[in-house]
Image 1: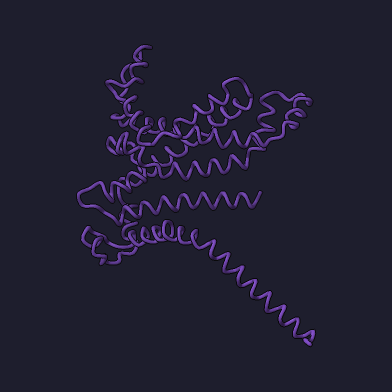
Image 2: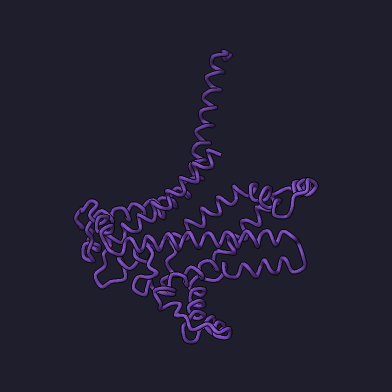
Length: 308
């Protein structure tokens, strides 16, 4: 006969085996995700950091024997005359785009909460800019804003406005890419904010109406505060995406004329791949600055969420 102590030992052994099996099963499920994150996120980030800390040429990039240069590439970036204009353009491009995308997207989301005929059809049509490949959208805006044959200048000429060189004038190039980016980003804000509005209980609006609140008061004191969590993540995602916008600007203006629409993203590409003698180190350094900016706002969002 087995004693009580032997039974306890066997039970504990069985429990340990089950826990070990469960642990291995959990790691087996996590393994594909971990491999994906390491291969497509961690390793590229490491390589980009390594690029920014070495003096790479085309030969050393191929052979892998680039000498260590420390923060020399970052110093070169900060001392370059293009840095401050590119940083300013990045900030203006990002903040103006996000502000208009969010405001217009929120207005449309509130508008579509009033269910009416063709409401679903119109919402679907508003998704078209978001669904189109970015190269198609950028090419379309380049054609529309063409100085000589663009439909925008043609429409303005009908009301007596003189020709505007949207893509070739230093005064208008940045404005042109901002307009195009706002148009592309509105559907994303509309979809997220509209989904958030569906979670607001209708009883709250009814109570506010009984208290005599006007339409604007109901929006400002009910809708907007209840949308704060959704608004925060929408703004964060929009910020991270807009910081790294490259293809739209490159297709429309290539960062010109005379760097009038150059951002950190386009400058990083031009340093690394846009010259006959590529500067991989400074290009990677500019890319890391963008990563740090996005990381800062991400940590700010997390801190704000914990505080709330």
